[in-house]
Amino acid sequence: MKPLLLALVLFCVLALRAASVSACGVSASGVASCSLAEHLEETRPHWALGVSSLYTSTRLRFSGDLHGDETRSAVLAVVAYLPSPTLVLQAAAGVALDGSLTLPEGEYDFSPGPIGSIGLDWRAWHEGPWFALLTSVISVSAARTHLAGSPSAGYAAVDVRLGGQLGLELARVLHPYVLARVFGGPVFWTRQGEAVTGTDTHHFQIGAGLAVNLGRSWNAFAEGVPLGERALSAGVGVAF
Image 1 (cartoon, helix red, strand yellow):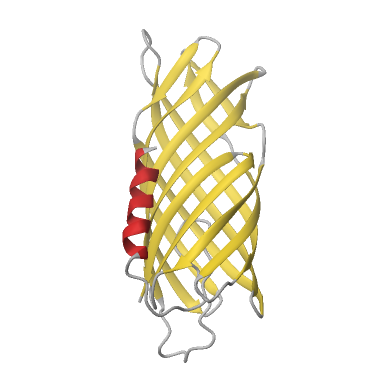
Image 2: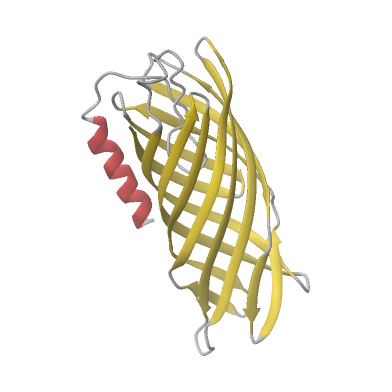
């Protein structure tokens, strides 16, 4: 949870600097997807940088009808290109810091490992204060697992995720939204010397979030997902 707390601290510090605002939603990876149609094309931002923190808790099903509970946390740095006022192309790289996988024989600890993703977000609709955002992301992560008294083993996961957000703009500063996502992808692992594959038992997320404009360029978000794959995330971003 430490990376999530760090992102929340950054959120609070930047919020104290809030000034003029522009309409923004939030992307799946944490960098705000700003819709700046009211500005001239030559003056709107075309790039964005951000940092986000993520904590997930889910249940996995492996070959052989083996089930286990997994928790992971990660920190990501994101770079995004905005070719139009409604489209965001983005790439992220970071570190999955820690976590655990609980199985009948005990609790496996995760070592830190790399994580990367590419994604596309599209503001599909904006009418008055309402907006709808479609999101997509492909991610890959790798780590090693450790069980007391056993050698470490490789662990890799691939994830393809599609989602949507429906939100409301309040006073051009606050943007609460609800979200729904579907996802899937395999997990490749070596358990007790045997190669196994796995996947989530729930392939969906339903939750809500809040995006906040912190100035003409700065923005931040916090998000909670209680249904399906459970998750907490927060981040800050700047467009230029």
